Image (cartoon, rainbow, N blue to C red; front, side):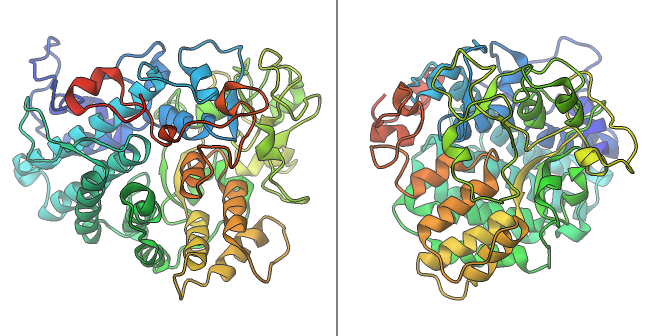
Length: 513
């Protein structure tokens, strides 16, 4: 927890959001520190990098919470695909364009995502460059671990940039403040990110020895596997054998699946974070690590005021829910009967989003994320009273990477020609926990379907559809794809988002925009 407790102290050393326009100014507030003088402040500095994934600040959006890293990136992955949609009750700028895949370069969610990526890359790079100034306040081992973790966080930001935008400024610890950084194309960004991440991994502590909330070596290998999984999309060259090898490194320390799927997304899911199924999470805790992004967005934003009060109470919702996010019918229809992972509230709602003005009867409600703890789940009478959230903030940590995803990646690698993956075994482990029968064989299509049922609303769906060639064009359409209720083809250039107009003069624009 102290990672975040001291985060506000260590603000002065953090640079601006881009090389092109660094905020290299003296602070007006005389209380702002100009140097770090204690070990706790250096830990706070590192903590501020982790906090960057959930907190607002540094960029300007129409709503403060809208600019948080997890929230805007989740929107680009989920609302633009076949899993989530925003009803018209919410009139925030940019949502309707994401709903219908008709965004342009002035969409604020796209701007916030790109700005956050550059911001995290810059902050991580500055921390690495300043670590020698810590002197005796940090041991050599601490400096090595800090630098390695910062490189992993920087790699995660670049993974998002590579996936969503395809090109951007390359920022590292050698980038001069105030200078315009070189613009790398997609392959250059991929190669530089993979090389730096791979070099950092041996210095990152394994999960069993890492502090809660910080990335572990297993999480870093998972990030590397994610890059390799999509390498053919990013560079034109498939790297599934490398992906499988990175996945095996994740498994090497013996981490296991959690016994119950549903407990991974409730208020006490920190029990499974780090040295458990949730390989890396963005921590949230009411009163100390609060965020209008992360799981607060997926609980308060999804729960609907048309739901009965006793149902909302069972979910731990003691406030007026925001009633904005709904489930697209394609997601509901993907589940086999009896699949325990299908966590939707349907009573009184139609499995349709044809009329986005009617949020009180159209569209199922996703209740995968909730406020209640594992002990209070399903109104367990032996667990004591449910602690209600009255302000909307959620305690559930946001799962960035999970072991079940590692299993399904191995299953996919096997079907893409990599031997020795035990893909059938790992696919059936995932299905068994979901309460589904084992299968004797499977196809790539089965893998994609299993990924949707296991990982829905976790921020991967758009990338998965692109890797399988189903995102753009007419091979697969879903509700509101292309801006019409029944769905329509979209142009191939929408496999990448537009570079926000604020950055075009520096890094250029993607084709088609």
